[in-house]
Length: 326
Image 1: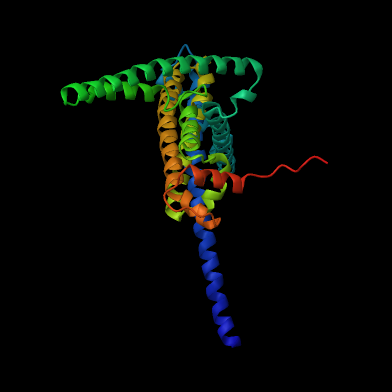
Image 2: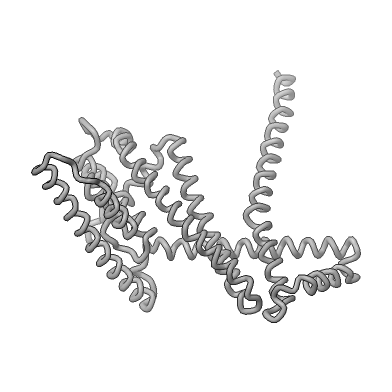
C-alpha cells in the first residue's frame, strides 16, 4: 500500500503541474491578445501623434528618422536598457488595455441604461427626452403596422386572397428598428434587453430578474456556455468602444487618429447591437425552454407547458418576504 501511494503521488503532481502550465499559457495568451497587442497599437499611434503633430501628420520620413534616433540612444543600445524599455512598453500597453476595458464597461452600462432613472439630473433629463422621442416614433410606427394588419385581414375576408406581405414585413422591420416593445430606455440596446423582461412578465407572469439566478443554476451546460459567450461578445464590443474613446483625444495632436476613432466607434456600435440582440434572444429562449425545469426543482406542479399560473407560482415561491414591522 505505501508503494501504491508513492506511485500515485507523482502522477497527481504531474497532472496538477500540467494543469497549472496550461492555465498559465491560456492566461498569458488572453493577456497578450486582449491587453498588450491593442495597447501596443495605441502606443504606436500615440507616439506618431506626439512626434508628427498636425503640421507633419503624414510625414513618414520624419517619423522614421525620429524613431531611428531614439533607437540609437545609449540607453536603448544596451541589453539592460532594452529589457527596461521592453518592460516599460509592455506595462504601458497593458495599462492602456485596462483603461480601454474600464471605459468599455462604462460605455456598456450607458448603452444598456438599466439604471438611467438614477443618473445625475442633467443626464437623466436628456435620457427622459430620448425615451419620449423614441416612444413617439414607436407608437406611430406601431399604429401603421397594426393598420396594415387590419387591412390584410379585411382583404383576406373579402377577396379570399392573402395580401402581399411585403408592406407588412417592411413596417414590422421599421418597428423593430425603433424597439421590440414600447420604449422604456433611451437606447435601442437597452430596450432590446428590457423587451425580454416585458414579454415574459406579460405573457407568462415570469419576473425574470427575480427568477434568473435560480434558473441559471438549472440550465444545462450547453445553454450556459452559449449565454456566457454572448455576454462576453457584448463585453468585447464595449471594450472596442472604450478604445474609440481612448483614440479620440489623440485627434487634438494628430488628425489621422480621427478616422480611426470614428471607425472603431461605428464598428463597436454595430457589434454592441448585434451582441445585445443575440444575448436577449438567448435569455428569452432559456426562460421559455427551462422555466418548467426550475418548477420541477422547486416541486411546483404544472400539468402542461409554462403558463401564467406557473409564472405566478414561481414568483410567489422565490420572492423574498418582507419582515413585518415590530
